[in-house]
Length: 601
Image 1: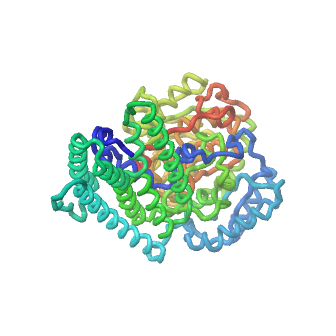
Image 2 (image 1 turned 45 degrees about the vertical axis):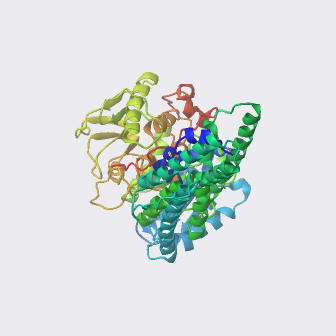
Image 3 (image 1 turned 90 degrees about the vertical axis):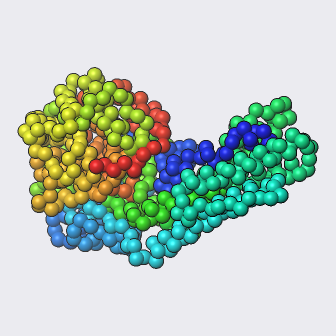
């Protein structure tokens, strides 16, 4: 049982709960850092040192018309990919595919094809070819499951508010013969106001119990009141709040120290079990049953206020209905069981883990051979083969918006993180390579025609409006950090960066098929150093640096392309230590992103 003095000294435990962070943490799909913290990684090595081979590449083409299949076979012949590695898909024309059609027809066909293969002929990477849809649409809002989730979360919010008010009233009655009638906050009062509403009764209850304990230190009434406070305290702040309270205590003697250690071990074990439960549920498809179970676990783990925060933010997420995905990002998880669709899932192949999760089936690498014309697709294939023999040469152009000497902060999806990453990459490449690096730190983009001999490019920010600044070297690899740069690869009048860069000669690029939020982009100081070693294919570099799947991003280019195979610009030993885990020893996982919701624009 908590000692009265320790409870009093810690003040109101729910004042220490980070409601915003707690709510955001639970309302997103499970983060990569949480996988690691919970120890859910194990089994197969996650490193990409085993080079991707042509026989491990599967090719998906459309069965509508001839161009898609012809381009697929052109690529397969060029790369020596076995003919049996081709699957023709029954997909409609156009860049969009309905979620219903993906679930009912396309996904089952791909799974059946992959799972029917012999173990010795397993596919590690899939390539989608011209005329395979670019994007999978969101679940329709008029579906029964959508409406049920919305109604449940609305009722859950009301229930949490009612129980919070009831807890305050119960605190007011502790050792109080004349409890005050509390004036409840408004039905739409902010969560912070509810926390303050709870704080008053708690402080008064603590004061009453402390005063009585001084007068009657061995009183049964005091012991009973402490038990009541402990129970109500747990309702308010959950197991995590109880743990914080125990940690704040300073036991007087060996017996008290042993009791505190026993209680802390029990609470820690319970908290781990609750987190494991949340982890398992977070990967399940959205449903009222899942939300109900999550709410129960969150309430037990972190109390009513965090549960209210979670339900409130989850309702906002459900109403935004961010269940769309790029076709290729969803395809990476095609061998997974059914999973959550709202927002993203962490990429198990990301460099920050040295292990794949034993509980998850294979996650596939995916790339796309696409563009505005079939001729561009053929050029992507031809360029990759030619440059692998000759080696990519040319300048590196990096377009930041300001100069900063700061190291990139912890991975939090902030503008500052990516700004610092571009600056850091420029310093790093100038120090470790012989490449000519041009860094622009003005708010303006590179001027038109200002970037001759461009081999590599990364920068921001021009939303959906390509600037013709570059003369691209054959084999160039480039991407622009903005929100809409792969929303189409086909519309003739579109100026989005991915399409226009492909039109103008780039051989590989990546971008979002809808608003991805900034944290969805591979960080440039991860992506380009790995590429420059010449040890990894394009698909392996992308897979090792892409933060999320079942989300927005797509990679366009030959997945087997290795532009620095014959002329590595960077040795593995010169890689940042965190990236050596991809090719060499395991690295260290980054902390949980603090702000992955920062829009890319």
